[in-house]
Length: 203
Length: 203
DNA sequence: GTCTATAATTAGATAGAC
DNA sequence: GTCTATCTAATTATAGAC
Image 1 (cartoon, rainbow over the protein chains, first blue to last red):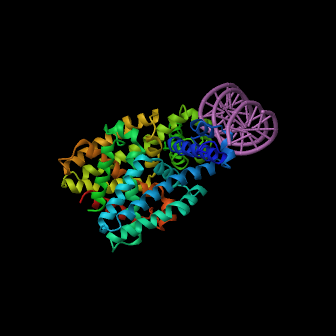
Image 2 (cartoon, helix red, strand yellow):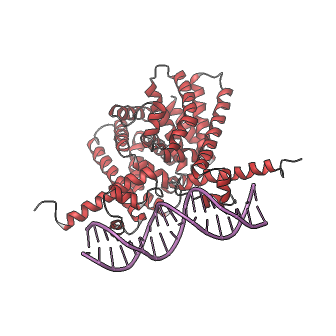
Image 3 (cartoon, rainbow over the protein chains, first blue to last red):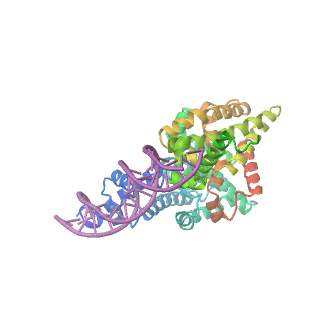
């Protein structure tokens, strides 16, 4: 039998549609602005299914945010293994290029992080402990290799400077278009942004 | 007569309390998350006064966001005049330092920008046309002076990279503390961040 | 599994007393 | 100007039919 039709497959597909729609809606409208009705409508699913598959709106948010971070980690891990033989500076530059490429097509990552990072609520604690910390440890390893004399706080400044510099232009793409005329989502703009950051962060 | 007691003064003070509380609440909780009841409670004012002084929640948001941008513009204009005699690179570095200092004590600026910059709603259009554009023109002038060969799109990349790199760490300060142990709001951390950015953006 | 219907809360905005 | 009380609409979550 095919991949369609079995109950397990149907479960998975419906759940996946809802998680994907939730990530987009939370990113577009904010946590409170994205109603479960709106999410269900985007997923072309019934509102009751959100309670059925997830216990609450909070749990749905965790599923949506967690999924994006997992995708990023997977992409970075894979790429970093491929360039493990290059010298430290080129590894760092490649990590920046990959990160920029990811946030360009997944601006939700940044928007969710900014919305919740300001408050000491449970969603933030969960995000830091479960998803962000492993990535930050990876960053420190790469960063420490090409800047051996850096302190712990040097890494923190560099991490947030890099993340912010890479993401903002894509997170506010409609604003950027209106303000500057540049469409940051175009392929050439993504590449230009990546090269700009690789050059200034790893001179 | 003193500054207290007159009706005009009372009006101004109450209005100001509400605008200030609104900026903090919108920043903390997002536009939809910040209820007018919550804002009134923070301002120690009655909820009905929000309708009395502002027509709607949207108008209140504009007053709050507009006020922050005006404060930033005032600070940058003043400082740029003071260093008008320095060479172009030092002017650019000083502008970065001032900008970092401002967003460190006003992380609302960045949070409001990120929340609305993603959607083509009326709030975003208003923010870009009324507040952001004059600041971007100033940025291009300073930027073009120390990088005379830069194109229009170069300015756009640099503008958003700088704004993001400067702001994120302060906008998610509680998250940064939990993740890295560094408190970005400390005086020394603000200075360190400013110098880090001044060095990498204006080598 | 997916649906409709609805209960319980909370939202922005308004009316009118003082 | 500031207050209380309230209207209408939208929210999350639940109950139960199919």
